[in-house]
Amino acid sequence: MGFDYEKYMRPGKLPHIWCPGCWHGIVMKGLIRAIDALALDKDMTAIVSGIGCASRLPGYLDFCTLHTTHGRGVAFATGIKMAKPGMNVICVGGDGDGVAIGGNHFIHACRRNIDMTYLVMNNNIYGMTGGQFSPTTPFGARASTTPYGNPDPPFDIARLAIGAGATFVARGTAFHASQIDKLLVDAIRHKGFSVVEILDSCPTTYGRRNKFKSVIEMMNHLKEIAVPVAAAGKMTAEQLQGKVITGVLHKEDKPEYVEEYARLVERVRESMEG
Image 1: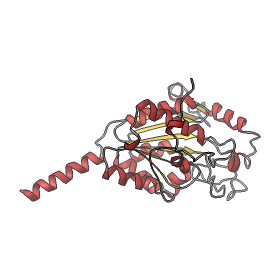
Image 2: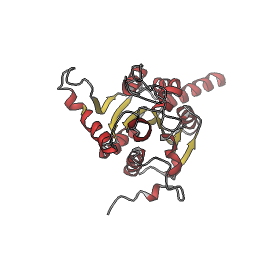
Image 3: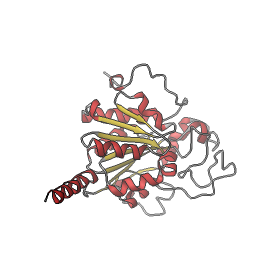
Image 4: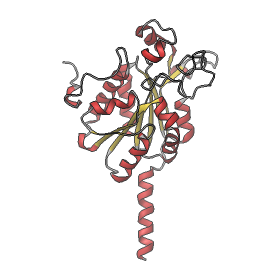
């Protein structure tokens, strides 16, 4: 028997709004499988998002969901975790929502090491709002706002997360669909701020402008540039040029923010009572 995705879907919300060939559905199914593998309680799981194609994902899922303002998903998710520390908090969004408009929230959530998982669906473009270039649009790539090629160097989301202090960082691709749930299971289990970046190109606003002939060609491109972290360790810098490393890229243990904050509150209370 196939996996029963419907038990995790909100009735009456399909068909979805994503374009034909969009890969966000692949990522959503990976998230559902991860939640199922961990047997998370629906009523104790909050899925939060900002604005954009990727951020429409929580509306389809039968959990405690929150669709917020552009770039503010992590801020709202932080509030949920502070108010309800026992909740499993998962934030989802795209590259523009996460590291452009929401970039400041992103780096400070990494710095604090608050216990939540942030799933970033990186399709290298602002897909919903007009096809503008984003902080991850490759150098030279075309977008509606860079019709002659993007002059900006792109962010590496995983490196940014590690540098800002996230204690779990992983990267996968929509082509390697069976890996998505495994990365998310590890991320959700981790005590601290976990970032999972999934590369899932947009065929409508990115692929067409950048002369990809089909979704299949875009999928094959991701297949060709993805290198597992174990294999990458045996390759030279020249061999890794133009490649992206996938798998768990960083993991460490550090004090978790909500627990440290609770200890601070207790110390203040004891000092006032004393």
